[in-house]
Image (cartoon, rainbow, N blue to C red):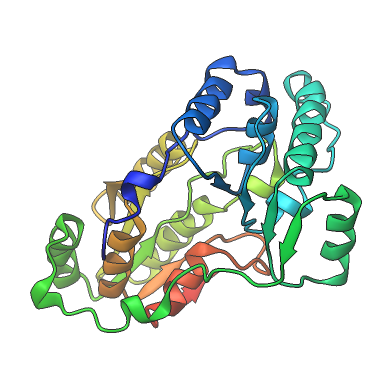
Length: 276
């Protein structure tokens, strides 16, 4: 649980395609370049680095950032009509000009998409693990100092079934359907279950993370679930993993169940049943 990389990691604002016009965010990427000898990036970063006229040294994509984001998506929404075009062009150029790509061999469709980008840099056909499995195999609760873990222990004692739901809250009419996480289905389903089994002791741990936290809190209030659902600030992964270790179930996205992503892998590494 070393913090050795904390000082080497730059946190940037959560962005969408329209932020490609945001000069403050682009200035932040310029600042990162000025303070760094080596740039390792993924996600939306290639677009913003390219908009700042900066080449990435090492690109380690997580998926949609290389097979989806570089390709224009038409939108009738006036804010996204031109933003999506400018963003996709910058994402494609940012990936194209990355000096080094670290990515395993992908499906035929994904490889065709990568080929369309016409990259100029080198590629290594391997990848870093999303989670280093052995790090979390021998968690000794007697030696844990995590504040988050200590705050969760009373809920573990209180509930017979403790659900951990750390997916981003994004379900209330998102413009991009890929951002639909289906969080509302968890709370609606829990409400129906408790109507049938009112004596069941079930709790949910979730995070104040995502654009629809306010909508989720309102839904929970309307369903009368405030005593069952407990909110915490966004956490670092190492603390999330400790929280998952206390739970019985991990509920991930409840739409697009074919996806594989961090929430699912985190639950599996901790040996928990994952619902998605």
